[in-house]
Amino acid sequence: MSHQETDISRRQFLGQAAAAGLMIAPGVMLYKVAQARAPEMPASSSQRWGMLIDTSKCATGCNDCVTACQKENGWGGDNSNEIHSRPDQKAQWIRKVKLTDKQTGHVQSLPLMCQHCETPPCVDVCPTGASMKRADGIVLVDKHICIGCRYCMMACPYKARSFVHEELTGQKDNAPRGKGTVESCTMCVDRVDADGTPACVEACNSEGHKAMYFGDLNDPASEISKRLKDYGASEIRADLELNTGVRYQGI
Amino acid sequence: MKTLTYKMIDGNSSGYLALLAILGLFVVAGGAAFFYMEHHGHWVTGMNDQVVWGIPHVFAVFLIVAASGALNVASISSVFNRKVYKPLAPLSAVLSLTLLLGGLTILVLDLGRPDRLIVAMTKYNFKSIFAWNMILYNGFLAIVGVYVWFMLERKMNQYSRYAGFAAFFWRLILTTGTGAIFGFLVARQAYDVAIMAPMFIIMSFAYGLAIFNIVTISIYSWTNRELGDVIFERLRTLLGVFIGAVFYFVTVYHLTKLYGTKKSRRRRFYFS
Image (cartoon, rainbow over all chains, first blue to last red; front, top):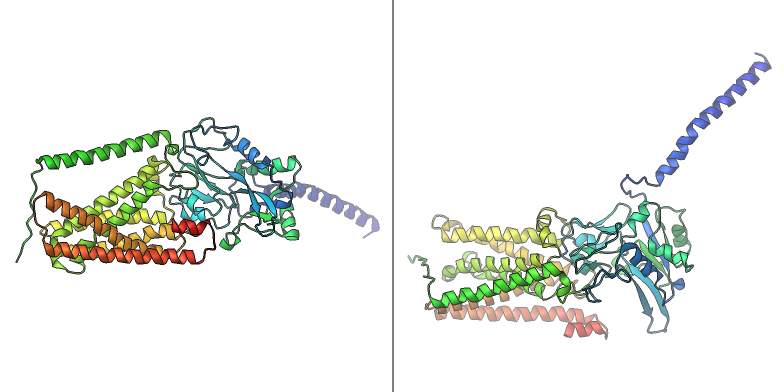
């Protein structure tokens, strides 16, 4: 065996190794992309979508999240397709709540929407199973099966659900709403499925308030997970042990 | 041995026809109200997103609970073997069916989508006490239907005791289930309490017997028959006992809830 032979075989080996590497590289890349869900794949429990609200950055008079939700999903505000309903009958997917501590006089503001609980009371009580939780944690109403009994509205600790009291026209394509069914915040599930963020979070950030965060709670590398780990957060009505997907800092 | 004779009334008297006409008016009014609400939507009612169930549901639950209690007299005759009530037992059972159908009618017609009743009958979420109640109500109609058949048919009369037992236990479970609709609402402090179930049971005794008494006395009076002092006294006393028991349960329920409440609007809610 001469030195020349070894050099040639080493070169060949390196060449073959590089070729092999090039062949599997696309596969490695595809595998990483596949972890972000393809649209035709069902939701999976490997992800859990959640929101984080930083109440110290939430201003009392600001309604950007509410306006964005109204625009995105076609309820209330300028949409006014509920022309007969009284104000207490009109839909309210998200609302701003002002908390005043009687003892200290401290005033806080926060947006309150469906908390997308891990063990949602609304899902437990729905007689037909229309109120359901997706594998990735988003709680929805199946508008095909909802019979409009409103039992879920009684069961919700956050009064997050609304009932459609009249015939509606001009609904948005991404938000099916119908007379006689119950609805609530969907976490803009169509946006989330297209790798986007809910309209409220997007509006809050685009206006520069940075009070709302959205992300995958099961992904330790996501911004929301890192913030939760560093600063902590609390649930509203934590005594009910619902393990909500929406958490609040500063309350 | 005394035998029971069943006689049909003529049904021609002006009083009877007038009664049918008045009841018919109620039916028409109810139908008109339903069509009006179904066409326009629930905005025409007083209910809203905070108070999602209103007066219709108060009546519906009242009728359903009363239906369960109206079966009392039949149960006392069959299950507890008080033979003196046997002639009144079929009326008790039929009245029970009628009241239940009335209550269910209100519930179904007040749904946001009553056209989806078939969905409610075929898709069940068994974690929901509401879904269980649908099964219990339909089962009650079937069991009491069989009970009435056994009581009225000579051949099957010997088995009426078994049907009576079945109906008795089924209505206890049904009434417990109805109370649990409210008792299982963990998120609402005013409701989330175990006493709902027995309270509904004792209320069913009172409401059901009250309606039964009114119906029985009216029927006997309008067909010129004597109910008799013995029965009259027993029914009256029994109703008094049940009403007293309802007072007790309601008092315990309110005191329990008031005990934990600090000076707040919730206290006023319990007092109102």
